[in-house]
Length: 392
Image (cartoon, rainbow, N blue to C red):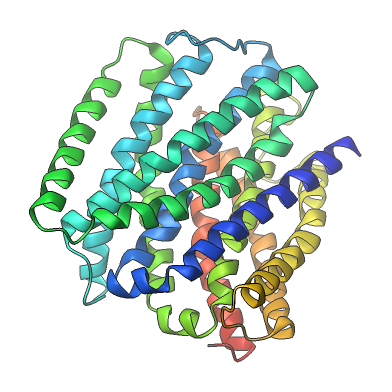
C-alpha cells in the first residue's frame, strides 16, 4: 500500500510539473513558427533528461538497496562518479542531438528549418540549463530516500522524467534566444561542439572505474534512444499545424509522454532492483512477481492520464489557448493512454530482462530504452487518437 501511495503521489507531482512545461510550449507558438524545426527537438531533449538522470537515479536506488550508497561530494564516490557521468553525457548527447536533429530534418524533408548551428546551440545550451536542476533533484531524492525511507524505484522515474519536462521546455525556449544570430550563433555552436568532443574523450578514458563504465555503456544506448526520439519529433513537427489549432494538445504533450515514460521507468527500476537482489530470475517469460508489478503500475495509469487531460484543458481555458473541448481531449488521452500502458509493460520487461541476461547494467540500459521507445509510441498514439476523435 505504501508503494502505491508513493508511486501515485510522485506521478501526480510529475504531471502537474509537466503540464506547466506544456503550457510554456503552447505559449511559445510564435517561437515555434519563427524557428521551424524547434519542435523536432522537444521529445528528444525532454527524453534525454529522463534518460540520463533517470538511469542515474536508478543506479543510486540500487546502491541504496544494496547498502553501498553514501552521500558525499567526493568525485570518486558513488554520487560523485554518477554526477560526473551524467554531466558528461548531458553535454555530449545534447550537442549530438542538435546535429542529428538537423540531419533528420533533411532526411524527412522538413523545410524550411533552422540551421545546423541553431540546432546545436538550442539543444546544447537548453540541455545544460535543464540538467542543472534535474541533477540536483535526482541527488536530493536519493538523499531523501535514505533519510525518510522512500523507495526510489517508486518516486525517481516519475519525478525525474516529468520534472525534466518542466525544466527542459523553458530551457529550450530560453536557449532559442541565441538562435538565428549569425556569427555569434556559429561561434557558440563551434565552442559547444569542441567542448563535447573534449569531454567525451576525457570521460571515456577516465581513471575512475564507475565513471568510465557509465559513459562507455551509456553512449551507445543513448544514441539509439536519440534516434527514436527524433522520429517521435518528426511525428510531432509534421503535425505542428494541427497542434497549433488545438493548443491543448501541446499543453498535454509533455505530460502525456512523461507519464508513459514514468510508468515504464518505475517498472524498469523495480525489475532491475529485483534482478540485482536475486528476487526474480529474469526469465524470458515474466514471473508472477513481475506480472504483479506490471499490474500495480498499470493501475496508476488511468487516473494519472485522466488528470493530465483535465489539467491540459483547465490550463488551456485559463490562458486562452485553443482546445477541442474536454470530451474530445479526455477521449483522445485515454485511447492513447491505454495503448501506451500495455506497451509500457512489454517494453520495460523486455529491455530490462535482456540487459540483465546479457551481463549489462539494467539501470543504465533499461531506463533510456524504455523512455525513448515510449516517447515514440506515445507521440504516434496521441496523434492517432487526435485523428480518431476528429481533432486533427
